Length: 300
Image (cartoon, rainbow, N blue to C red; front, side, top):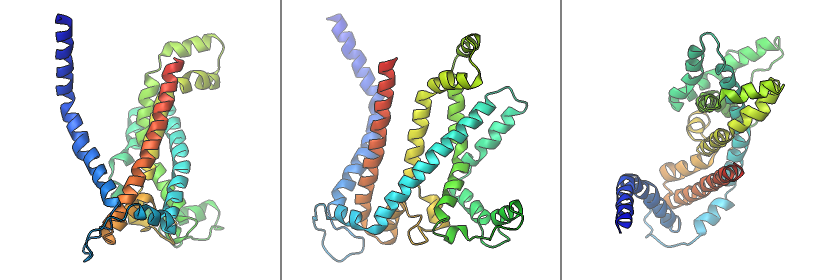
């Protein structure tokens, strides 16, 4: 009886301590999502004289039938497929470099992490100047100098083939420092005895990287890839400031379509449907990550 009473007491204390977090999840995630689901099944439009009507899944049929939204999904997928591996590889290289006993490595860590601290709006404005068209644009001038004048100046942000890669380049530069810090913490959590044992067995640096570093960073890399993928689908600020979705929807994204529908076109129901689709995408990514981590625990 005493054991059962003690267990109930611990459970009660646990629920009390988890209460604020659960209340926050309920108020700021569950309730808004359910509201979005409900609104997506209507024809709500701000300022519309029409009465609110239940239209079922018509909003979802409309957004998936809209070429601009389908292009936004493709752009997000392409952005994630390029940015996630490149940014993760760059961050891993920087973490490996700065994990070594180099002179001034604290300054280098600060330097590489600094772009993460700056607001994305400020970073986008700076890169707008870097990507300026004409021979006087910094990037055009640098490419012209590197190619001994053979480079033809390009209007990066108004070129359908260069606008999205330009945003990718800026995003990789801005976000690599965040992944670098996480991976650096993961590297420092790998016991040095593993490397010593591998060296005694005759393993070189490359073999140590493959058989010690990568397995030791497995869960950290999964977390980094998960977060970076979610951030890739949340792409908005760069697009809104640099291209406004152009040229010809070459850089439009799911978030940009949702915000544009809600605040510029006042199509609240359409924006709610896009929000639900975005939530499903993020949920699918999270479930895949949980499955990978569960497999790791089963193996270990």
